[in-house]
Amino acid sequence: MSDRLPGFSTLAVHAGAQPDPTTGARATPIYQTTSFVFNDADHAASLFGLQAFGNIYTRIGNPTNAVLEERVAALEGGTAALAVASGHAAQVVVLQQLLQPGDEFIAARKLYGGSINQFTHAFKSFGWNVVWADTDDIASFERAVTPRTKAIFIESIANPGGSITDIEAVSTVARKAGVPLIVDNTLASPYLIRPIDHGADIVVHSLTKFLGGHGNSIGGIIVDAGTFDWSTGGKYPMLSEPRPEYHGIKLQETFGNFAFAIACRVLGLRDLGPALSPFNAFMILTGIETLPLRMQRHCDNAKAVAEFLAGHPAVASVSYAGLASDKYNQLARKYAPKGAGAVFTFSLKGGYDAGVSLVSKLQLFSHLANVGDTRSLVIHPASTTHSQLDDAAKIKSGAGPDVVRLSIGIEDKEDLIADLEQALGT
Ligand SMILES: *Cc1c(COP(=O)(O)O)cnc(C)c1O
Image (tube, rainbow, N blue to C red; front, top):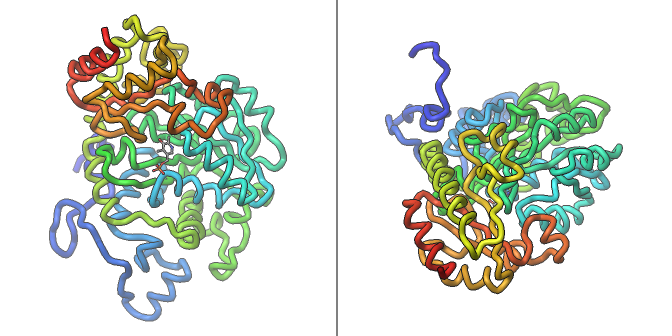
């Protein structure tokens, strides 16, 4: 091997994987086992005491999942990662390490609808209080900071409208407040945006979407950038204080720049339990091998479809950052020069009824609640993913009654445009 650092596409295929030492299997095997035999009693004790790394029980770690973790950490430029059962599980595990009951975190208002629900309702019952801010007004993040703020949470490309967040500007606010910046990078994938390069301390993903990419497996992952100093001011006791679960070990002191990933595994995943099935890890790993090819095609198709819609008489507006006229186009050029993603919204002159009618007439597009599939998908957020919000909150989060969301797949773009054309009824 030369000294060259491998490029993104090479890492997508190889990072974390080696031929299986026992069998020579070239694809990563599915280690479909719950538990792993110890060498001897000392080995068992050192694994349980965190003095040695190794496999114990699949709820805590598994060799198939470990390949996935190393691969995504490499693609995102982090120090370590932890795979979990879903994107939502990743969010719970991350915040459990950071917040005590009564603490606050600041979140962008433009978010995946499921995250808005999780933050507003489920997290409230844990005593974790979300304070909303607006990515179009960075000062609103600064105004939201209080002594109880423990983290800031944003999406790189935000659901459902595909707007681009100024990650560096929010990172500056987080630095000043002395709290970590968490970026949900699901809609961009590391192929389009690597948030750690722009100041993120923690990256989370729903692997269910573009990383897995084929609409067949639910999964999530947490990537530790290794950049945050958890020892300051006793603000993060899970990381800086002696842990009774592990004979008084201090995680930051012991594990340095991957202490956060360790905390998520040994305090979060171990005790909360949302483990990823090794079978799903295998499916998602296979998906990641083609991420660069798929993602480019997704973006190129999305741009063509957005341009078609922008010129259509039944369409009131298209919100796609890849269009030169879009208000997020400058940010897209800076943060996502290869493409502005493949999830975006448009609004119909005919309002709510036209949205419902369009969804029912489309044939190639599947009407369902997902994004980031090889197949093109459509949904009417106001009547589905964002239906729990009141009208004002719907509009604020980009899901007004006239809005339709598309997730553009990797089919032939001419076929996608023809399907939209017939459904719009020209
Ligand atoms: C789907 C999604 C999630 C939640 O992930 P699950 O795997 O469905 O739990 C979180 N954030 C974004 C941006 C998503 O699209």
